[in-house]
Image 1 (cartoon, rainbow, N blue to C red):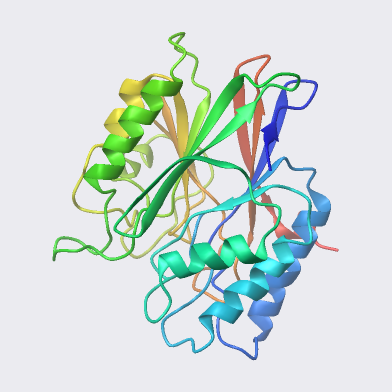
Image 2: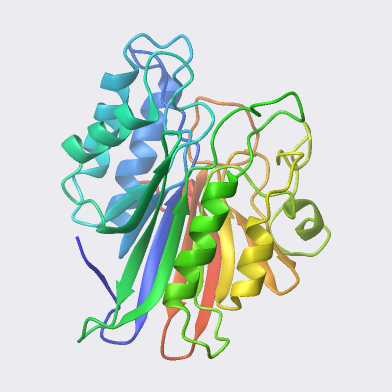
Length: 298
């Protein structure tokens, strides 16, 4: 499905993250997550649904494929275009990233139209083009990267953006660059980049309450943030992963933002919800806020 600005130049994204659907038969927490998804789709007048990973639990889950399909069935009841990437828990055992991508294509008819697709080591990166309301001009670009799972060597805990992905971003962002310095484009992935540590010292809104590693970023830095900065037209990045963080922090003029944990069948005391991102191409502004479940629960 094509993505287009509204007639007034605006575009609204709703970010889900860390839904963590588990074993069948579903427990009360998973059923509550299904309700949150249904209620959010009915409540928000969105132009794009973005899920930033840990869609399901896969370790020790016998029917991970069926669970993924059933959750996608809830998203497929809407006519809102949807896109997603995966987290560290989505393909831990039998099911693979490529399996999940095939299931997504099979079960979600309202898929957003992917461009610039690049798959390396079964991790997919792609763009979503947001077109003008009345023409095929690409007005804004959404970059989606699969940030992987566990660190491939014993340095830290979590994976880092592959150098090949960083090079893909560098080349692809150069292709879309307009040269006017307007920060209009967004990046989505699951695991935060290391610069989130610095952004946590300059929080504009939200909370950094994670009690494990505070920011569960990789310990190696492969330069994605640097390339976002050098691009000059990247407004910010949105991730998931840390269930007790939902802040919007600023680092060298780039927003480093957490979504709000959406799933109940996982750790964390933070109230569940979604993040809403509002783009306005006429004023060249981007705003974002967390909306908690109690505000849209039926």
